[in-house]
Length: 227
Image (cartoon, rainbow, N blue to C red; front, side, top):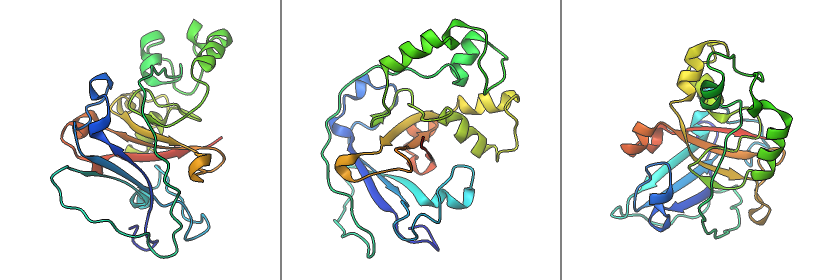
């Protein structure tokens, strides 16, 4: 529930026990289920937006972890919410790459270069960007790895939110904070499930590695982007 707004819609579940956890770059539980919920605008025609920069809206996106030994009961869809069609998905292992604007790439090739701009290195050339686009040309659903950001790196959005938006892009604290977050999962718009996030956008949940190790999924941060 988002107090004052209403119930969140169920977006997806991940059966951790069926994932090739040894191949992942994040420390997911070996068993149990992750459940993802989002206030998708059904109840208010999209009036209330869940935004990383708005702390009061953070209750509009949640991730819950249910261990295998926890007692659970199935519940029906809350009134006035239309459930998304169930679409079973299978996972496959793939490589991921991040854009040159990501703080970690910038730190490797152009230390000290300000965020938000191209810098003098071949990874910023149009030829390399075109090749990178051919390697990974769609967002897709993903667990771990480098996020496929629709706009600026989602790690920067989360860092700005955590720092209350008071740190300029040329402040090294922003890059440092962005490096503290890893992708937990991203969910693309999905025609088969009648899911459309903005204009063909995606939902992202990120988490600090230490919170992931302690299974503190309530500390995961959410953002979304669309084209």
